[in-house]
Image (cartoon, rainbow, N blue to C red; front, side):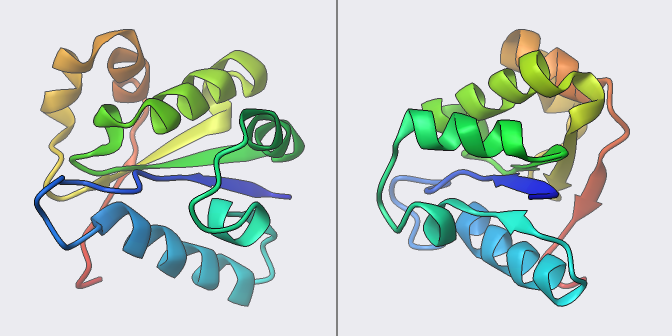
Length: 130
């Protein structure tokens, strides 16, 4: 794989809109159309399944991890584990954050060491309108 897509499965417990999940599927389709081999949990291990060994193996098989930073990203233990594992195994250059417009980069300061590491990247902001 070229890219591992890391995203929050649910951005708000009371919100019907799952920004991370929707954006992950859109990014996956976009990358595949461009001929880029992308790893996405629902395509590679199935919807609703979480298998740490399979996820970590998927990260190691990729050249980089794209972290879709949405409001729920840091609330999910899975996305935090994925990003931390990618930084440890792929290096800081192996993680590319995409910041949703509702997750300002300034908020990363309050998200601990992972937030500080991601803040050091330029990242790319995106919205659903682009």
